[in-house]
Length: 195
Image 1 (cartoon, rainbow, N blue to C red):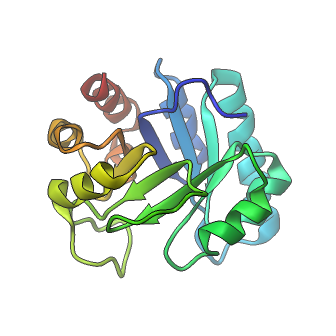
Image 2 (image 1 turned 90 degrees about the horizontal axis):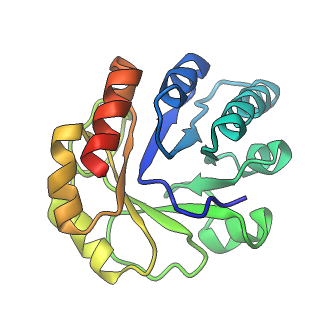
């Protein structure tokens, strides 16, 4: 079920304690469950079901990164696909209509199946290996200018960087490392910067 107002803060994590801490802060967020290999399908499903229960209790959006099968099986609000995952048209077939589908982009493109674009890497980050060079606010803005859906900037984003990303045209941000270091404090700071 898509929330009436799409969240501007997306928290990407595989940690249930981080999800609990983030959701203890008052504010509308999306939790993106990112389960890295070598986690079993059963464990990925169990984590997603647990996260989904917390999200439902707090009115948060629950998405699953990369694992469309887990998203569908758990009944999540949607999923996010990256450059090496199923193409967006195929992902939409798996998820069905009316379910949130996020798509990673690094340059402007037409993707009619997407509910939102995850755009980056906005800045340099150490939370994920093998990323291309950062595109900065200008790159995020180029995608936002060509997009008809919300653009969520990701990678290396801190609360202090939010104003320049919003000024460039981003709708919101996704956070990984900053949230992992201080879930409650960073969530509070991100929500304040995004309001």
